[in-house]
Structures are given as structure tokens and as C-alpha cells.
Image (cartoon, rainbow, N blue to C red; front, side, top):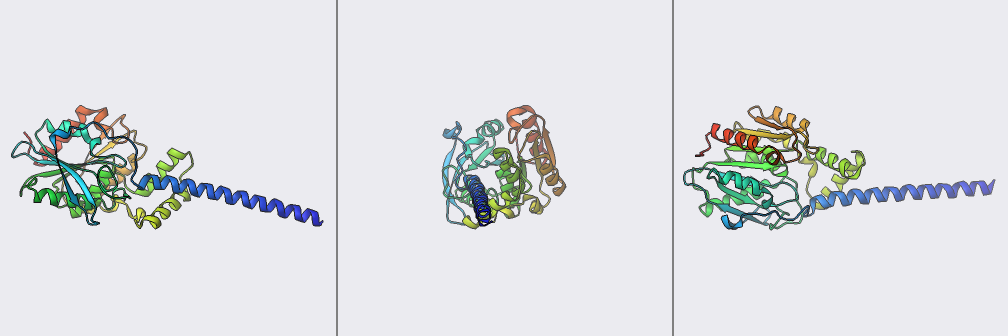
Length: 302
């Protein structure tokens, strides 16, 4: 009897040890997955970019971080477009948008968000606080004479850049019109989708554990990143929402929630496009819709 009890106890300890090892492995995987997405993410090399067109400059955000930015002048009397890149890339990822908008004579203003590209910062808030980077860049651009008083200013953002514009709309009153491609409604939801897609594990409490861990480590409340709750910041300013139908990250449900929360928003649905690929897949439709939207809202174009 004693031997049987000892054997059962040993098997119990082995089982407990195995469960603890599995839990530790899962925790390590969640931690690694979460941290690689917030600690200066590196998801690809810079794209080819027409640097010769741009004047580089630097601004500071509310954290004292240096934010690198680039300005290209346009045809006098026309408007300026602010272009906001997504997560894990930098301003060079917007080269195709630069080529498109330069054909219409727009002045262009781009930046690398914190913890991306040439800008300072170790951690990204994935669109929650990056509006302060925009605030710093716009103020510096105005101080340098790039944005004269009365200059029409519109903004295009994709994914994290779109979320940044939504979260910061109330603090960026000089932006007169917004073009938002693949914005997410809540970071928690897109995080769960990414975790499931990239690990093969279902979205579960592990996603929440990951968010709580990185929030504890960085001091950034990632679960507060809910652009759908910040849409009142647009007021009555015009918005164009662009959804890519094959997007596994910012889904049609996200788009529909945001559309319902922004009554004045127009929409462009691009069949066959994946995340932030609308221009690549349907360039003519994309460009015609964007230019038509800008003209309709009074943005000066030729």
C-alpha cells in the first residue's frame, strides 16, 4: 500500500511538473510574441524611396523623443497631404502613395513614428499615443514654414497610422479630411487574430495575458487602444474609410463598427485586397476614389 501511495505521489509530481513546464513554455511564447510587436518591431527592410524630393527635419514628441520627418513642397496654392505608415515599417513603405499624390501637385509630409525607422523610442503603442508624434511634427513643420496659415491639410493613414489618426483626431484640429485604410476597431481584437494566425493557437485568455504583461513592462495601457471609442474626435470633418476584403487583421466587422461610429464617413471596399493592399490591387479605383473624395470636400487640387 505504501509503495502504491509513493508511486501515485511520484506520478502526481511528474504530472504537475509537466503542466508547469507547459505553462512556462506557453507564457514564454506569449511574452516573446507580444514583445516582438512592441519593442521597435523589425518586419522588413526599407522600401525604395525618392529621397531627393524631400527635405528631412526632426521634431520632438511629448516624451522628448526625436521624431524624424520629411517634407516635399508641391504646386503653390494646392494642399498638403500627411502620410502615416503602419506598424513594423517606416515612411518608405508609402513610396507608391508619394508617386500617386505627386502627380497631383500635393505637398507631402511624412514621418517615422516612435520606435520605427529613424525615430527614437524603444516601444510603440501601436497607435494609442503616436498622435503626439504627429502633433510634434505638425508644429515643427509650421515653425519651419512648411505649413503656412490657411494651408489645406488632409491625412492618409494605413493600419496603425489610421488608428493613430482616429485616436488623435480631437488633438489634431488642423487636419481637414481623413483617409483611413485598414484601421482596427480595437487592438485587443487584432492582437487576438494575429496571435491565432501566426501561432496556430486559438485566441484565448493567453492573448489577454500577453497584453497585460507588455502593459506592465512598458507602462503603456495597450487594452485602452480602442479607436472605435475615439471617433467623436472627428466632429463633422469628412472621413473616407477603406476596407480590403481579404484583410485577416482589420476585418469587415472592424470596418462596419467604425463606419457606424462615424456617420459622415464614406467608404471604399476593395475586393481581392489583403491588409493595406488596396492601392496595389486596384490602383485606378483607389486613386479615382481618393481624388474624388478630396475634391468633394474642398481640398485644393488641379
